[in-house]
Length: 302
Image (cartoon, rainbow, N blue to C red; front, side, top):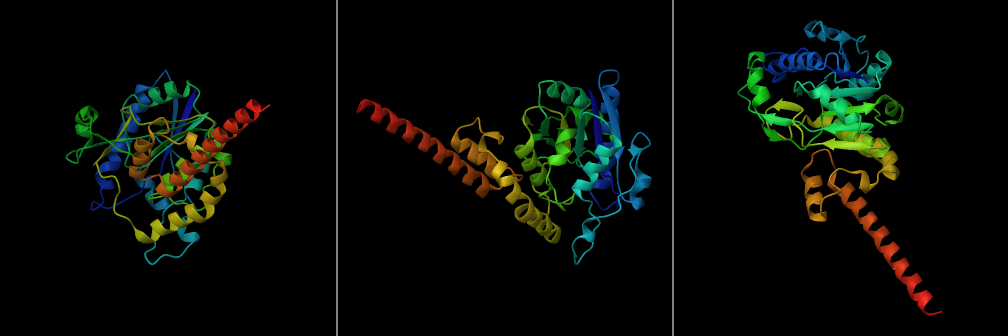
């Protein structure tokens, strides 16, 4: 089995939280690859804009720079060069022949056993994984503190920011002009997996990734949030809707009240959409039961 993992680094100022977090992310990825050595083949790739290349460590293979951003498709009052998710994933697909592709956000750090655990999960026949992180204290500031970060069990986080999928899935995904670094990118990718993966697993009970900080929803950049939301709700969801079955959604093994609460609390799900699907599934079950009852009564009347 070969895994190919891509990240999208960005050169930022000390005022940004990523200024502290990115070096930690880099180092945890290096450690996890070393930990998996001789057991799982792991390829590390990075892709970014030209002005960001100088911060990328040498143990990543740099894919040719991104040539377009969300600014090429819409006008914003405060221009920011957010890359398109489709461009990043396609670049990884073209750069590697790995059976499984991995994308993680730049604020997501890996536990040393990450790649080995992912490989073991994939051997169970899954073609896509969505891995929830754990949030740890913001007191950590340096890679020198990694042993303590690894030991900090933290708190579970409900959203999605680590995706693993079989390479053949990429050609099916409908991502339009969804950009990375903004809310709704995870929503778009998660719903694509639910629609197209034959065997999807939500990994929310293993300590495989972590994030410095426990916030669930970061501050929104309204313009770019609105862009991603419109891309999803107007261009992506209408095409995915016929393919989305409530039985493939995470949490369906729970009781109705618990799964509705889980969906409502998860920022990657649209509560109205899952409630509508739950209603359609209930209607189908009731119709089946009524039809069965009708046929039984007809048989007794013979």
